[in-house]
Image (cartoon, rainbow, N blue to C red; front, side):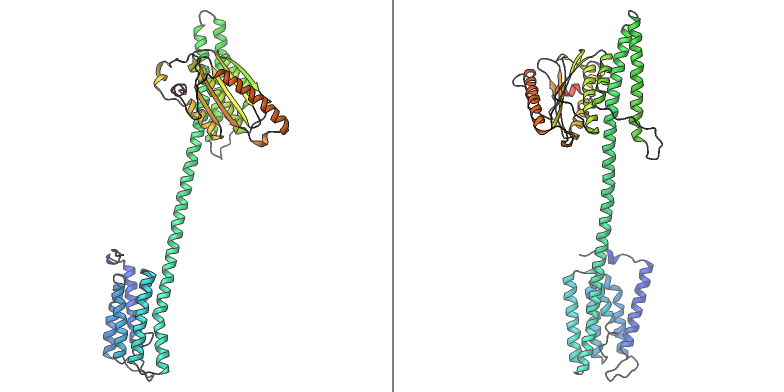
Length: 445
């Protein structure tokens, strides 16, 4: 492949190196022409000077046109024998230098073909143009080996350069992969923190808004009730600040001396969560099926946040003060069901109506992250329903297999009968599908 590399101006250091190589080759060529066939030493003839000048003058061009330079240097070595000079390794130095360059720059097949042709030509000329004897054959063979050896060295240098280039490329790709992985982890952490902040702000601000509305409504007619709502508002905002401070603590650097963080919320704090909604005016009933078990911290937090977000949506959008929370425990699953009796055609007033919220999006992300299944949509009889199935790790189950099977059979039958009673025939809420009302109900914070 032809490139412009050989035609560009070369740096001064490279030009100096080429000058040194050319001068050294000229001197070595003349030294090789001193030896005669009878092993006597004489001054180089005029023909030796001419051949040395021609072959060495072509050397700087070997980077641009290596094959023609190889032809010139080989012919000069042959003409040296025609002029009565002995074929010695010093005479073929220009051909050796050109053979090395070709091996470094050209493909393996091209290099092998050129070097073999050159070696064959030198061998034939040495055997024909010089007196045939055992010493002549030995000297000619040993001399021909030098350009071939230079080609082998050039091919090794080419392989090493290719290896170093491959290592450098792999290092660059590894660095890019590390940077890409770091960016991906940062993005995931940002999404996780944003989801936590959304759940926190949506819950606490919704409760604070409900309590402030109650206080404002009863401020003149029922001052005691207004004061009670204001006290609850103070408590709600204090809890919001505490949780916000703990969540923002995730952004601290590892060297910061932060205060010990409180445990992450879970289903153990569910009564407190339900009570906070009751204080805001929402009537919440909790129904639990099956023997309750323990969940890993991550799954426990996920279950807590799902219930919190679903009840926040009810408080903000349902337009009615009743909701039901169901927990169904089986050996492999914990099923969370949150329903309300709000009107099915309820429309969100004000600015929220046109905004795209992240309530159900956050719930779906949490459920998907733990490998669960989410079904959310409007109920035909009115209201909204969110059903989240979260898989339980096998190691969390401590009961015997026979007892668990019996309990799971009874719970499954009860859950199916309850679901069949609540869902009319023809209603289909496939996993992952959110109806228009679901998108409407996801408009939180």
